[in-house]
Length: 114
Length: 112
Image (cartoon, rainbow over all chains, first blue to last red; front, top):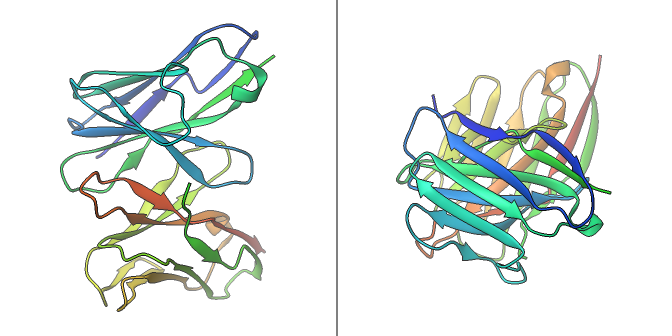
C-alpha cells in the first residue's frame, strides 16, 4: 500500500520551455502533497505544501510564479516549472500523506534543461 | 532551509558488520522518521517514531527516538550488499503543517 507515482521520470528540454510533472497517490486519497527539490549529493529541500482544492504554501525563497502547483483532486498534484532555465535542472520529488500518516514518496523526476 | 545534522556523512563497511548512524537537531520534534534512498529513486520509509524513548525495529533495522526529542539513531545489524544507499532522518514540524525537515544524509557502502 501507499504507492505514489510520479511522471515523467526523466525529461530533457530546451531553455524557455515549461515542464509539467504529475504526482499521483495510487491507492489512497492524499490529504496533503509535498514537492521537494534535490541537488546531486544533497538532501531533500521542501519547495511547497499542497492541499487539495486550496492554494499551495511555498517555502521561503521558492518563486510561486516559477513553480506552479495545482492540486485538483485528492489523488493528483502537478508541478509546472515555467520558462525553465539550466539552473532549474534538478531532481524533483513529490510525496503524499493521508491524515497523520508518514509521507510516502514518488520515484522522482530528473529535469535537465539545455 | 533548515537541515538536521546527520553523522557520519559516509560509511564504508564490510558485509556482516553492524552500522550505527544518528541525527541531531536544535529543535524538538514530535515525530522522527528514517528513510532510505537509492540512486535515481525517491526515499522509502524505513521506520517512523512517535514517542520520546520509543525503540522500534523493522527486520535488521532498529531506530530510537531520543529522550530529549532532539535526536534519533538508526542501527542496521549484519549488513548486506543491498543495504547500500543514502539514509536520511527526518523530523516532523510541530506547527501542524506536517512538513518534514530532512537530515544531511548518511551514505552507506557495503563491501562484499
